[in-house]
Length: 165
Image 1 (cartoon, helix red, strand yellow):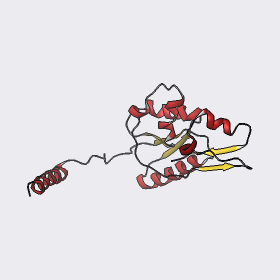
Image 2: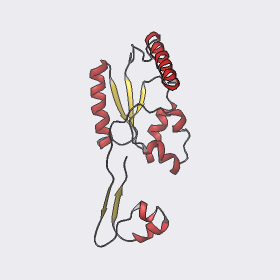
Image 3: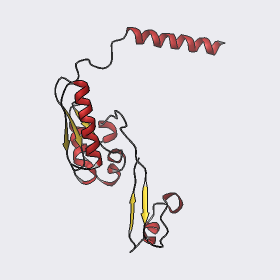
Image 4: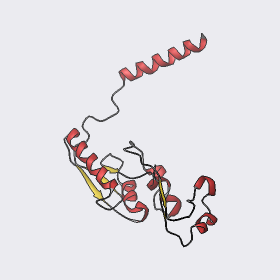
């Protein structure tokens, strides 16, 4: 009974605060064009999805959303441009999560994506695909681990791997 009463009091207080507080979202955003930076070259899947999103957002908000492609190794250039931009909502990054998680592990960056970037939404997810030719046994990261031994098993044999999500 005590627990239920405390929960009721907390929920009532939160509801009261929500009713009297001002909206968090600014009603006048966007008041000027918004740049959507894609850290990949034009014509790929990420670029296509960003352009579709920009078209939808432009129609919804009545303001231009412009896609700007900034391809570079690991997407570091475009991601860095967004990290250095003013945190005013007028420069957005449209990229895979690998730009935030993987690239900092492989490259020395002049910015901290975990501190300087804020996620807004997940636009889509994909599936991981692995292809192998001939009689080779595909490498499983769970079974074989990501080691130099696993890489040597494929040495000299054609293989393709794509990670996503």
